[in-house]
Length: 219
Image (cartoon, rainbow, N blue to C red):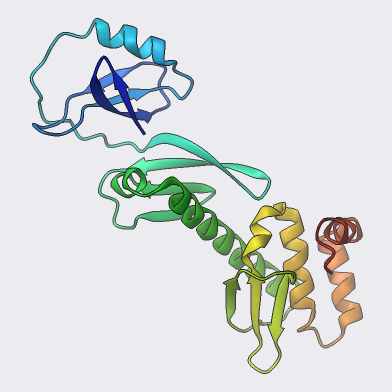
C-alpha cells in the first residue's frame, strides 16, 4: 500500500521484524518503508523525522520473502508473502500464499483477492479430491469450478466430470471436505460401503451434513 507522510509518498510494506526500515529507491522511484503490521502512522512519522536526508540510492536485494498481509479463506487465515521477480504471479504451497511483489501492488485489491481466493480454493479442493479418491478407491473425471446459484456441485455422468461451486469457498474447509466426499460417493459401485468408509474417515459426517443443510439448504 502507499501512504503520504509530510508531503512525501512512500510504499509501505510489512515484515516480521519489529524494526522500521527505510529503503531509498532509484531516481524517480518511490522510497519503501518496511514496518511491522501493527505499526502506527505516528510511529512512522517519528521515525522519518529522525532520518537524515539522503539522495536516492539503489535499493538492496531482499532475499527473504516478506509477510505483507493475511487473507481469510474458508474458516482459516492465510499468510501472504511477497517476493521480488517471482516467475509466477501467484503460488499456493504448503499453506502459504506467495505473490510477486509488483503484481500484488499493481493489481486492484478486489481483483487481487478474488484471484488469491480462487487459487487457494481450487488447489485445496483438488487436494481433497485426491485424498478421497484414495479413501473410496474411485477415480473421478475432470474437475472444474464455476459459480452456481444453488448446487454445491454437479456431476456429468457421461464424462464423469465434477463441477464444484466457487461459492463453496465461503464455507469452512471441513464442510468442503464433506462436499468432496459426497460428490465422489457417486462413483462408488456400492454406496453403502462408500458411506461406511466416509464415516470412518470423517466421523462427524452427519453433523457436517446438518450444517450444510442449515447453511445452504443443499445436500
